[in-house]
Image (cartoon, rainbow, N blue to C red; front, top):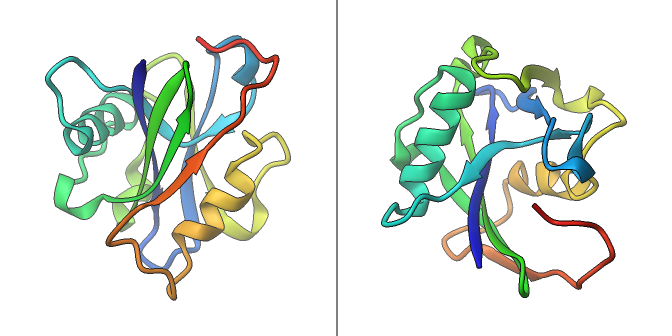
Amino acid sequence: MKKYVAGFLFSKDSSHVVLIQKLNPQWQKGLFNGVGGKIEENELSPDAMVREFKEETGVTIAKENWTCYTQIHRPGYYDLDVYFALSDLAFEARTIEKEQVHIFEVNELPANLIPNLKWLIPLALDQQADFSNPFSLREIATERTEA
């Protein structure tokens, strides 16, 4: 089972969010997603979130500032820990690798989002939510190709 992290860095006032335009896997090509990637062997999820965000955006957010608020499990395919953080370092995020990094106003997100971002982004910003235990979601298998 592959294990991944994805994170949303919001500006301190929650008005902007950093997203990345995906090239891979093929089913995500051209769509915007949170910044993240694979958890390496013997690496803890929060450490992977810090590493992946720095590798993709050049910005370091300490692991204690990332909140794991959702865990998505797709049986037979992957486990994904979803994080958010609030910092005006969001405005310093830039493209480091091949996938383009963008900052968007939260109320003006692009149409070409990974479908679950339409609820993951508002959930992260829900100030009434208690994320001391991350929300857990089990996805159903579909015909899309995972990779």
